[in-house]
Length: 231
Image (cartoon, rainbow, N blue to C red):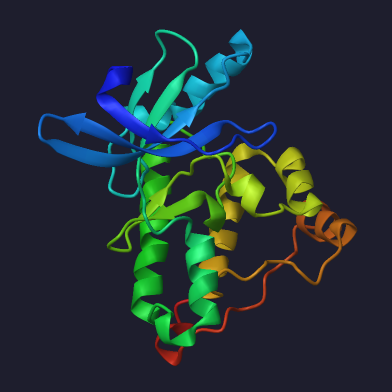
């Protein structure tokens, strides 16, 4: 994809964050909305390699529940990634907005379907030897028809403050263990409409129970009777 085949609307770059903006890819008489990530032109070679490597599974794999990287422009700086546009944004923000307006909250079967979609996307990554290093509800996106896509535009850390307890768990747990725990927490967040897990535990308690004793459990989510026997 050439750089001249698209139009973009840029926003100011937050300090230390890659620029992310909405764009259009023009192909003849038709155009498609996309999200474009731009790596700052002054990035080091190491940063350039990491920028492209992080997008690799989304370029290499095709799955309904994985965000698609449609193209990359790396012939000159700044490097660009052209990503699939998910108009409803991240799943955590969507569910929290629904929780604030109960009439708009997804029904139990929709939540169950979303949980299956997260699991299917993660399974496809595993089958192709990829590990997601930060699976969470905030890093899943939602299409216009409420399909869940694992992936993000790199802005979730600006929108949500990740508690220190989760950063410590990421450092101390192995990738496979961390990812399975993250899947369980993500599904719990889903049925709690974006609720914050472990909010009543201190960082020290999380480390003691989850890492050393491996006994930290989330409370059972508030499920309808039709789903309560499936948790």
